[in-house]
Amino acid sequence: MEDKTRLLWLDVLKGIAIVLVIIGHGPVISDHLYGFIWSFHMPLFFCIAGYTFKKYENKKQFLKNKFRRLMKPYFFTAGMLMICAVLRYIVSDGFNLKETGRIIFRWGWAGIYGSCWSYETPFPIYDIGAIWFLCALFCSVVIFNEILCLKEYLIPVTVLILAYIGIETRVHIWLPGGVQSGLTMLVFLYAGYLARENKWLEVKPHFMIHYIMISIGVICIWKQSMAIVGNNSYTFGWLTIAGAACISFYVAVLVRMLFRRENLIAKIFAFWGRNSLIIMCFHLIELDFMPWTKYFSFFADERANAVLIVGMKLLFASFMVFIVKKTALLKYIFD
Image 1 (cartoon, rainbow, N blue to C red):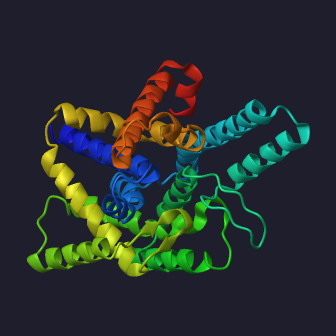
Image 2: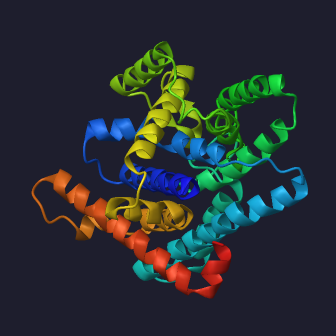
């Protein structure tokens, strides 16, 4: 029963996290909600990954498993983005070999580089969009598995040094594969890992620890601190990172407290959580190529339209999960 409970609330937490991603990428429902989401939603994914992380002694097998789990869907999505871009151009402007080649090169280079943002220096780097997350997570978990082989007292020092390197180097050059974001996200992987090992979600911390953590989280939300992990920038530096960790902790505590048993809401969020990888990949495709605002502007209030569009995005994502489960090739890619 304890194992089922643990899996339920974790799936619900992942489901909430992916819903926050979709809301954060959609039309703004509320400035306050938007600011709250961007203060912690991507670090939350890494905290969850850390909470469920298991150290592998067989590093070659670990690398193979993670590549299969994360990078197969990544390259599939990058390929789909290229195909959609070419088709959109042909439908709108007709076929032109030179322009089609340019589009293929743009998306092919973006897929190889794995950058969330576009850069012009020191050379042109095209963005692949939100799917950068899989590259960064792959880098982060592989490095984290190596760090756990160190002596225990060296682990937190190494995590902080690498996170600092990730933040500082992004000012000078953006490396491929989301390496710098992955280095900084080691902080959240380690936080999630420690939370499980030390049972932080079960044991009540001292009052002063609660006071400090809540204060940091409230300050970051109030000051609209944003953890923009895609380009590894943080509004208030390490305070933003600490705030994201604190907010993630209390969101996890709240979810664990509210979803101890199955109910309709828990089942819906758990479904999204169990299939968050599929949803993330197809969300990026629809984000770039589905003109939701063109077809779903029924209300005079733009916030109502925004809520409707988010609902349609979630409905589309749920439908794509069904398609993947029923298609042998897609099941192999997302297995």
